[in-house]
Image 1 (cartoon, rainbow, N blue to C red):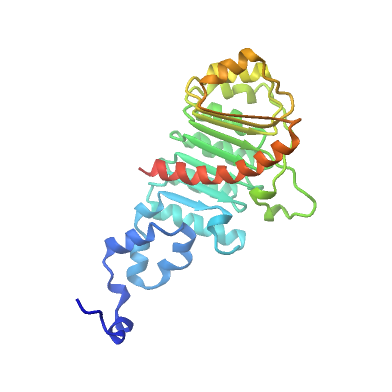
Image 2: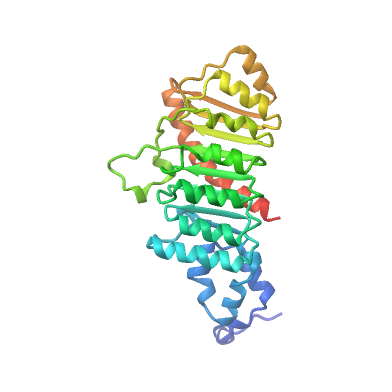
Length: 296
């Protein structure tokens, strides 16, 4: 078959691309790429961009944003994405811009939400976070990283509202004076110490957990033992910078059933720093993977 002349190629009407082909093409793009670019090309592309199947997973972390927008614009885009999902949103990740108002918007319109990732969302309050989790009856995957207002209560709230969680990741941060609260990225996070209160120990009540990651925790051997006993399906346990954790032989033997075990004590400074940076990057990849998984 002869190739089309250059003149015909330039004259081709791209608005006539069939809807199924356009929809398949858009699945390769991020939510922000569609909202700010591809969906604005022409009317037919806009209609394709409104297909609910494209909005079951919405990743608005910094690595998926081509440029930094004003917070109000990011929230507005996220709401459009939620609307286009037509109640089918299953995975949402937001970094830096998420507010209580947006969480309420998601909670009221996303009964199928299974995966939630909040990264450096300093405007999210305890009330807003608690309200969303109370509505998210199907939530299986929760990641909270560097969200100052909710770091201390993320675990007890999740244990109360979402005992069916399969994956829980809790990172706390300490902000360097050289960084703006809005400019935080995973590669420059450091650990801020936090104490396992009697409420945070409720991790052991999440019997469906498959993966647990804690960074900067004061968890000790007794508390770890309770978690291992209380979470029989645990397959991946990652504890980084846990200065009170000394694992006796008996507990280590009990942990042998866990397929992937990463225990990095506070004393292992160099190892801990490397593991922390690696895990921060890996967590984001896992968010994308889990989001894709729950779409199915």
